[in-house]
Image (cartoon, rainbow, N blue to C red; front, side):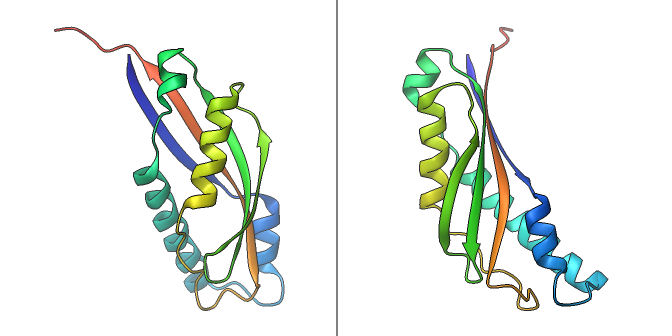
Length: 130
């Protein structure tokens, strides 16, 4: 079996309402937040690893973590809001999000923190023989 990992940012309404409050959102600001989201997704994707115990047991699933970061990208809190169905995968997802170095939020982001949902998908795909 081949291990396939994907990390997706699922911005919740909390994230959008925080970004929208207090100031008018221009196209520039949206691009800036889009750049932040793209960089964050890249960091997550490059840091993913499939737990050996779960891989050997054939476990797969998607864990969704609700994260809150401060304006400097520092971890404030993370909460598992949807289980992957496997405690090993859930623990790996929580540990990953707690240990990552996230980028600072854009300068024009007016709030002190940002809350968003991050889905981490662990999939197993049978390798094709040639």
